[in-house]
Length: 241
Length: 191
Ligand code: SF4
Ligand code: SF4
Image (cartoon, rainbow over all chains, first blue to last red; front, side):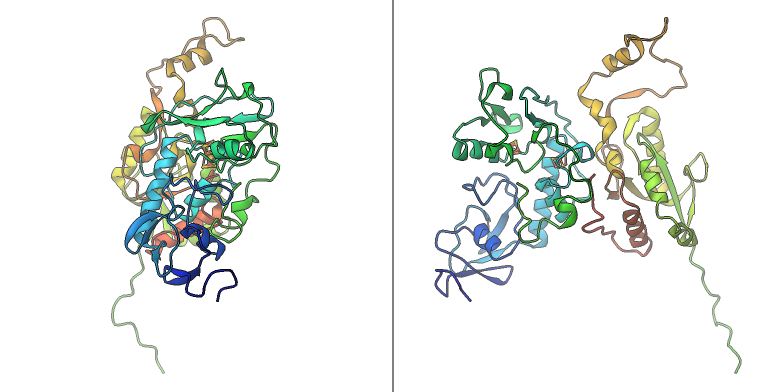
């Protein structure tokens, strides 16, 4: 069964199927490597787990935990795609949608967006909750990069990319509770006052439509984009960025 | 051999009554609905249209299914929606605007008074004496645009801007067959 360095008994079960793992891997890492889909938003294979969106919550031997932070261990019984967990995931997604302003028809990320694709997969037909319609002005100060905060889900992937890969620390999360929001580390708080470039990893990491290159629209028509063609659950299609 | 007459009178199932309306929408959802093309002939074997832009009936009667396009941007929208809810057994929010306000809701972070003043009062090129329309016949705009589920209970959501014709078809055929509508990948779209 095992082609890696894992010992033959180094496996856990995910919804009843054996999943081998390598020492040090989390449940989500091992599951994805084996071709399984565990819904997630703030996790990305290139970065340290953050464990904040909770969309990857699974039950490990009956106890809830984020699959992106729980270490794989031999013999664990992990449940993921159960009616109960999927219903919770849908509720989390609905809360993320109403907290921001997600008007997909006018969003350049539509069809390539991890939040949207995850909601499709979760069968989220409507928002259920009341819309917040928060007021979050756009930052268009940078010559090449647009920030549309309406769509931020606070996944901190840009924070991690800018700090860990680009070495620039351009983004941070400020405030708490419902006032939690993304900020730009510059004297004016504007992106135009930073040395960010389009080549930065932070410029391409956003899984939703916040950090977008300017002057690029409809290069690929709606209906032919990443998640129009294949679902987010398919191996190789689980990351939007 | 003679054919026996059925013992009981055969039962023709009653046609389902369907009403449709566009509130704060652009009629794009209705146009997409009509894109089911010749399948509309099959549809009218099973349904009868009540109030709808297709029939020009002005008041909604008792219906099985009500399809609502568009959100709520004025007081008349709210009245019509409540009337639909009262008369329809199953109410469906159709399209992005009915579901989350959509394009009209982009005005929600602006002050309504200022918008009206900008558009009817201070815009360049306006003729002298232009003023904000105030005919009592005009429904009053709401301060903010709202999706319909914030005002009445909604039974189903059919997303898309507009939902593709095939999504309408799948949704309605599921509903008419007594199944929970399920769009699945390719028909479930928010854009
Ligand atoms: S970020 Fe994603 S979910 Fe939000 S508006 Fe854009 S496409 Fe839709
Ligand atoms: S801007 Fe994008 S990458 Fe950064 S926290 Fe918000 S959603 Fe995540």
